[in-house]
Figure (cartoon, rainbow, N blue to C red):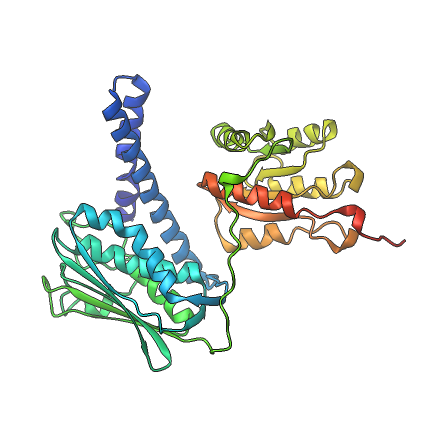
Amino acid sequence: MAVLSHELRTPLNPILGWSKLLQQGKLNPAKTAHALETIHRNAKLQVQLIDDLLDVSRILQGKLSLTITPVDVKAVICAALETVRLAAEAKSLHIQTTIPDAVGTVNGDAGRLQQVVWNLLSNAVKFTPPGGQIAVELAQVGTHAQIQVRDTGKGISSDFLPYVFEHLRQQDGATTRKFGGLGLGLAIVRQIVEMHGGTVTVDSPGEGQGATFTVQIPLAPQLNELPTPQQLSPNTSDLSGIRILVVDDEADSRQFIAFILEQANAIVTTVGSGIDALQAFSQSIPDIVVSDIGMPEMDGYMLMRQIRALPVEQGGQVPAIALTAYAAELDQQRAIRMIASALCAIAAGFLHHIAKPIDPDVVLAIVVNTILSRPRISSCSISS
């Protein structure tokens, strides 16, 4: 708990410190840019720590789930490499890649597999001194795709090697340790890899002699074909004339979401509670509802039950998107399963689920996609 408290508080120090200086208005443009970059970097670090804690909680409860599709391992590795590229360049690390085209696809969760490679690469960058080298190699070994990440970094002592993939275990647990972290990343890596039917191992000659992590995932049958991703670019999206009701009891979050949508020319109405949302609904039916889940008195689920109980002509089937800081699979499944209307067999609950903190591009893309794919009630035949 002491380590957890330390790691969660550490990013808050520069966030709160620089934000106070920004409020005082005493920073020149260069320092202002530095302050904003520092706040953003440390906020992302804290989000990653929280995500790791949530993943471990799901693992311990047996609730970590995968969305299985044919996955191009090459694309997964390239995406993970891109996320660590700046950090590697900052330390003048040389990353050598060997990624042949001949390796087939695997059946798995692309996001989770990218998380595996990202964790291994992040550790390599973290524990390799400036000017060091990292090698990433993809190969087909029998019926498996093999990913190896080697570094010339800190290495691992022979005494600690058996415990590398255990929760909250770190080679250096002293208060004087040089490297931070919760000791969760590699435990999550092992769980994700094993859920894919694969294995992950580590080898190190000793401290100061680098380490090699090897992941093997079973290849998919050759009949599988990669799906064609259909991505919606928010940069070309225009929500002109679209009326959106934003419901969130946190004023800062509410205003931020409204700003994102108004930048795309949407007509946005904001309210701070489920009760106020129903009042706004009675005055003007929106084209879409974006609602927080965790609110006092009437939460997002209760609000949706009230809306879905309305007749169709009064907005009972208006598309809705759930926002929540409770970013667990249980909340996502519960939100999507909120089906209160049997008309035309349309899933009339929350159509999408977005976890906080919110990425502006993701919010905009999902809203646009929801508007474009909203059901047309007039096309359904209803029998008595």
